[in-house]
Image 1 (cartoon, protein in one colour):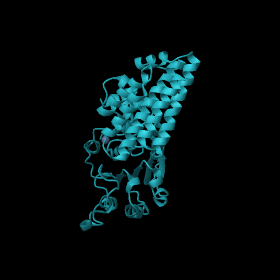
Image 2: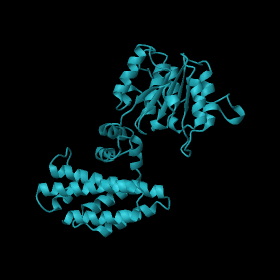
Image 3: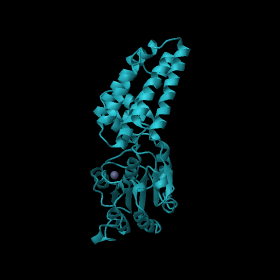
Image 4: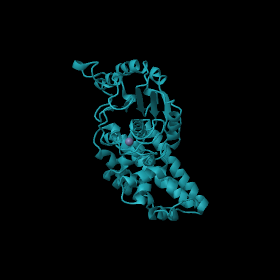
Length: 353
Ligand SMILES: [Zn+2]
C-alpha cells in the first residue's frame, strides 16, 4: 500500500515526533505502536518504512517520492527489505512459524532470521509485526532475543491494540508510541475517500458510532446491521412507544445470529449503541445543540414527547441513562431476553411518567 503524509488522517503529532527523531538520527531500532484496532497504526508504520527506503529523499526526512524503485516496490508490497507479518483472520494467536520459521526450517526463516540478514537494497531491514499482542510466550521470547541485539541495520515496528498483552520485557526494549482514536471527521473523510459510503450524511452517520476506528466503521457498513439500525430507530421514534414491538424486534435480531452467545451479545451491544446514538441525537435536537439538521425521525420523536423543552430534555436524559445501564448489564452477562424485556418496559415507563 502506497502512502503519503497527506493520506494519513489524524496522528499528526506522531508523524511530527517521527520526523523529529529522523532529523536528529535518533529513531530507535524498535517501536511499539499501541492503540485501538482500525485507527491507522499500520498505515503509519508502512509510511515510515517507505520514507526510510525511498531512494530519492534524504534518510533524515519523513517523506518519499512515490516514483523510485523502492517506492514502487512498497506500493506493490514487494520490497525485499520489508518483512511484514500479522495474525491470520481465522487465528487468535500469531503463529510461531512467522517469528522463527516452520518446524523443518526453524531458525532459517521468519522475522528473527530475516532481521539477521543484511539489507538487500537499502541501508536497513524493517519488520512490521502487526497483532504483536497476539504473540504467545514462545514467540515473544524468540523476538526478545532479536530485540536484545539492536543493530543500525534494522527497525522493528510492533503493532498492538492490547498493550497489556505485550510482555514487559518486550515493552521495555521498544519506544512506545500511543495512537489516539481518529476524530469523527477523519473517519467520515476516510469512508468517503475509500468510497465505502454513498453520501457525506451516511459517512457521518457511520463515523459517529465508530469510536474513531475505521475497523468498527467497516463493520457498521454491513447491510444487516444497517437495516437493524433503521428498524430500531424507527421503533424508538414511534409515539406511543410500543414495548412489545421493540423487544420482539431486538430478540429476533439476537436469535438471527444463531446460537453463539458471544455473537448474540455483540448484536445486543450494537442495538444499545443504535439506541444510545438515537437518544443522543434527540437530546442535542431538544437542547438546540445540533450542528447539522436533525433527521426526520429524531424531530418526530422529540416533538411528540409531552411537556416543555426542560421536561423533554429530562426524559431523553433518563432514556439515555437507561441505555447505559443496559450496556453494563449485557457486559455482565445478564440473560439477554430478560434484559431486553425489562429495558422495553422501562423505556415506556420513562416516556409516560
Ligand atoms: Zn521513493
